[in-house]
Figure 1: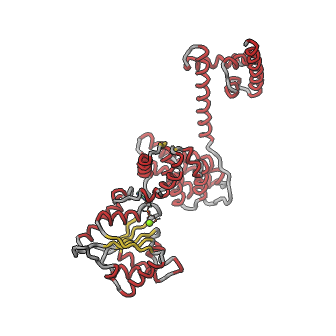
Figure 2 (figure 1 turned 135 degrees about the vertical axis):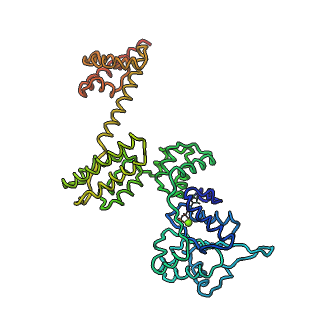
Figure 3 (figure 1 turned 30 degrees about the horizontal axis):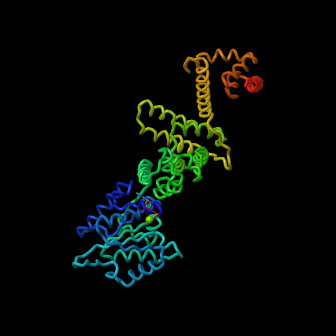
Length: 439
Ligand SMILES: Nc1ncnc2c1ncn2[C@@H]1O[C@H](COP(=O)(O)OP(=O)(O)OP(=O)(O)O)[C@@H](O)[C@H]1O
Ligand SMILES: [Mg+2]
């Protein structure tokens, strides 16, 4: 079974995110409950997969309302809507039905994909039909749409007066992660939290695609970052390059700032990427100077953020390094520009690798010499001195079982390391043979 169906929220409380929107929706429904709605209809709009349809259905369930669902992109429904509008056959569908005891039951009319009604075949009458429907209805109506602007422009502008607009926005990563965790627990899946975070980050606020992504790697039984590669999760570097390209080529601040928000990279990393690649993109010296001016301002704010531990200032840093830098140029450079990985980050990463290698070596030496790894770390410089003599070095390399990269590090010279390595190999082979004969 499809997990998005399995985990479709039953109650409004289970719909994650969009707290404000849910409150508005509730308020409107309560008004209907007491029979005095300020507007007959609401428009729930926003990007796909954030819970609009779910919220409408959950609301009806919470209030014990019956549902009449009309999907606007379905032709039969289109006819229903039009007939309702044209003939005023209100009671048939849009009036209140009665239950077995003769009590009135509310019916919620859900018009899904309302913005699709007119898009298809250039149906200009569609919007009019919706408007007539709302006017005629004696029951609550929820219009669902992705594109509020499209729905309410032109002939649709009357909808603005007839409906309360309620926007459903992206759901936060934090909330998506905890939903995914819940699903994992329920399905008995082990998971790395980082993997769920990666899914949540990539889905960009779309809960449906997050759940779908989770389900498609669930056969692994363990949700790991590694497993995500099967989904074609692009590696982070490529993602950053793409975003960087948009930011540096942007002609207006907003595009650049939005891109940074979607990328969701920490500002102290992002500034390094921009710093590294700005000269590649900004070839005009004045542009470059102005670009770096904004970058330096961003850096000032970053410093203040850390010093004062006030993360509200991150925003200024972000906006200066993206929007500011983007708007700083007068001459854009067209075409593809090759970007590079920040030198500084590379150095740091290399430094980390070297530290790890030294520690590993110290551990090995400590074992042979019966001392702690940290003690052995102290004598590494001494061993370096010994390594100036290739013969001694090769003997040491054998008894310490040094790897090629470790020899290279101690010898501080590639050619010399190669020589030592070869000698050590010879000794190793000889040792093996003597061991064979000793048998
Ligand atoms: N806010 C949410 N809370 C919990 N689950 C959600 C939420 N949003 C989406 N989902 C999950 O994604 C599925 C699809 O959501 P839904 O149909 O409500 O999205 P939508 O906003 O109506 O999207 P569309 O614009 O494509 O119609 C749901 O069945 C549910 O599993
Ligand atoms: Mg929907």
